[in-house]
Image (cartoon, rainbow over all chains, first blue to last red; front, side, top):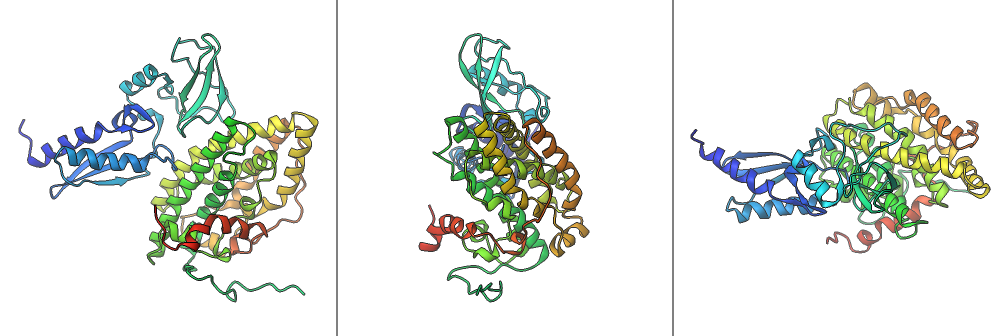
Length: 165
Length: 269
C-alpha cells in the first residue's frame, strides 16, 4: 500500500508522540494510558490531541511539552498540542500492555471494564507482588491523583493501586 | 449605624477586571467560583492535616476542584469574549464579583468541620454534574463528565469520614455534630433558583437545582444515620453568595489567594 505524504507524516508523528511517557508513572506511555487521543495533519503541520486523566492532573503541562519536544526531535516540526475533555478519560482505555507494565512496576492495575464501584461499596484488589487477594486499602488517595495506597496482608508489602475511574 | 455598600457603589480595587453581567457568563462563573474557593480552602490543609494520608487526600481533592475551576473559567472567558483568561477571573476580581456559595468559603475549622463541609457539598455536586452531562452547552457537558467522576470520590471519602467521626468517640461525635449544625444554614443556597439560574435552565444549558433536593436529603440522611448524627431541622437559610454578598471570611481568603498578583500584577512563573 502506498501512503500519501500526509499519511506518512501522521504515522511518524503518532509513533513519536506515543513514545512519550507519563512523568509520574514512567513505565507507561501516553498511548498505553489512553491519554493520546488523536494525531492530525493539516497543511503539513501536526496536531496532537490529548485528554487529562483528572481535571487537575499536574502532569498535563509536562506531557504537552514532552510531545512538542519529541516531534521536534523526530524532525516533524513544531507540533500543536490540543487538550480535549470529551469523551472523559476512563481506566477502561488502559491498554493490555499498559496493565501488564503497571503490575510489573508494582502498581495494581484497575480491573478491566470494571467501570466504577458502588458509592460506598467494597473493592477487591490483587497484590501486584505476590498476587494475593488478601489486601486492604490504607488510603483512598495516593501519591498521585490516579492512585490509591494499599497493603498486602499476605506478603506484608504496601503498594499503589490505580484507581478505577 | 451599619452601612451596607451596594455592589455598584463599591469602588473597584486598582487592576480589577469588570465581568459582563450576562446570565450565561455568570452561570458558569458561579460553578467556577464554587470549585476554586473550596479547592483553595482544601489547599490550606496542605502540611497541616492530622495524618500523612489525609494530607494527600485533601490536597488531591483540592487539585480536582482547582482543575474543574480552570476549565470553567476558560469557558466563561470564551462565553464573555472580553479577553479575560482563567487567571484574570481568579486573581483580578473583587470580593463582590465572586459568586460562589457561602458554604464553600466557610473556614476549615477542625477536621470534622472540613469533612462535613466537603460531604454536604459533594452530595450536591455529584448529582448536579451527573445531570449537567446532558447540558446543551457541549463544553459544560464535557467538564461535567470529568467533575462527576471526581465528585463521586469526594463524596465517598468525606462520607466515610462523617461516619467514622460521628460514630467514633464522644469527642469526635460532639465535634462532627457541632460542625453539622454550624454548616446546615448554608445548605439551602445550593438549591436556590434566581434569574441567572432560570435563564440557564430555560436554555437547556443548566439544570434546576431545586429538583436535586430530595435526592440530596436522602443521601445526607443515610450517611448521618450511619454516623449516629441527628439531621438538623431546616430553619433560616443564609443566602447572598450567588449575588456577591459574602460572609466575613471571604475577604481574608481572597487576600491570601490574590496577594501575589495584586502586589506584582502580571507576574508569571
